[in-house]
Figure 1: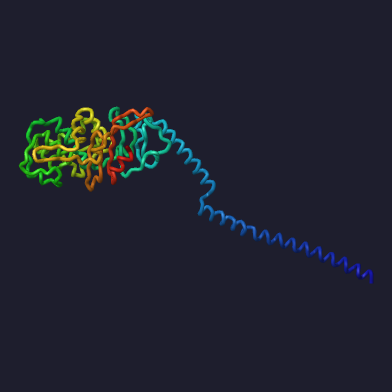
Figure 2 (figure 1 turned 45 degrees about the vertical axis):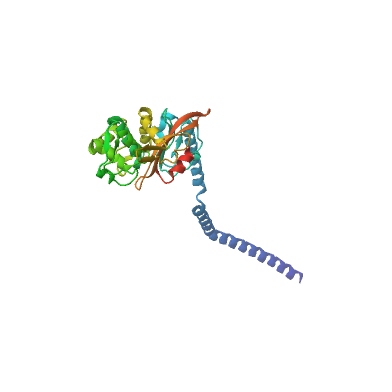
Length: 343
């Protein structure tokens, strides 16, 4: 009996060992068969994360690249000076605006106030230094800013004491600003006031007709070219035409030329009103009562939207020296708010 029990015990141990070995081998086999599925599942999970969040490796590389770009932008902004406008005035997302290092260094392009005007130039009109800008070389219709060139050509080609008689064709021009009627007569000097204060289209046409409209328009375009305004042209003396075009930088150049050569034009634009006989022409500028307002001109047409040029006496630089600053705004929607924000 003892021998039989011993034999059964040995046999049960052998069976148990074989069973363990068999189960271990099957486990390895099952694990091997499931490995590709597990790897596939892991890959799918990784790809889902990439689709949702982006590849971590690519993200890290992009972040490094963006940091380098930002460092370059800040470095260029800090080293920008008044002589480098043409080199970096390309507009766009990164260099949409810049400030002259003569007055203030910027750390970010967003340090300048947000404005509705698509293009602007802010500059010291005495020195010509550009303080800030956005798309200074982009061409836009300019509306009644054209009347500054009309006034300039009038100053340089007409006798102030000459009498202008308003024609029926002049008063048929769109708009009734100025209150002129066919047959009205006044001197060139007097006619400049409804032109610049009331922005009278009739006055602009009457001035041009007094010497021949075609000749006057030739003088306006000729003057633009003679003072280097390569992207500026005029189709009428009032600014109603969408073909009256310029850039914010060239309009600053025109304003500076007037400021230097014929400041009397700007003096007219700073008057509150001008009275002559039965007429009284009031200044349309919203800034006419500002103590630091030097002069300027505004305009509007459907093509140009709101346009504006204004000159202010403002404190600039570390010592707050009072300087004459010209601000040119083109293609804006709330130019008065834009102007005040910039000031």
